[in-house]
Image 1 (cartoon, rainbow, N blue to C red):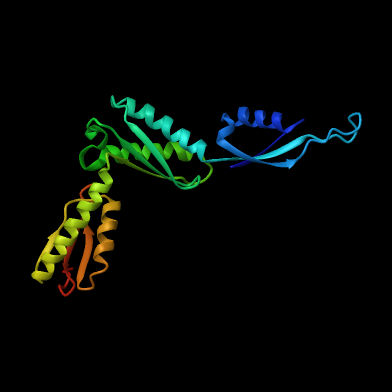
Image 2 (tube, one colour; image 1 turned 90 degrees about the vertical axis):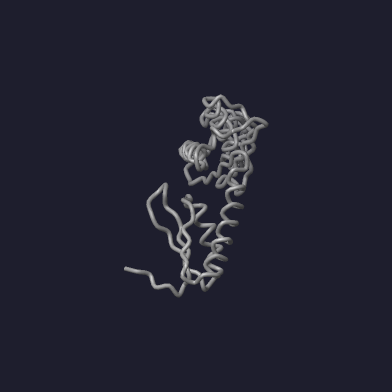
Length: 214
């Protein structure tokens, strides 16, 4: 988002920008489009003009405020860390605490995904471009990724030992299935496909020589 502001000097233009955008000075960057020209007895005078662009502090503040308020409804006050992956476009949010946060994760991570979705909707409404946000609570996603990699590699070995065997993995979300398919893509003798509907959609692994029944 870019917007120009004009006043008799740069300082006043900045103050106008803060009030108009409802932000602090730290939440935007600006460039001077036109310097103030005082003129001679007012003749030939020109106002200062600045072009304002919101910066990462704007989105970081929005993320922290939204999550702090949302998580308070769960009776939690955990530590929230936000990392900028790509300026004004992609953020990684990690929530941690010395206390268990299972109520924020939910079964199969569904509560965490719901919070992530609401956070994403909120932040995207504040921006005029798409913003991607990934939320991880108590390293749940990291642990799940390690788990997915392990069970996929175990399934591959089972299928390779028995060419007639099919292995159905447990239901996974789209992100986890993507990780699984990426691993499987490096095994030319293995075929994999997803079956079922969300949230029970899962991957089936079999030998590539097996003919798929129609």
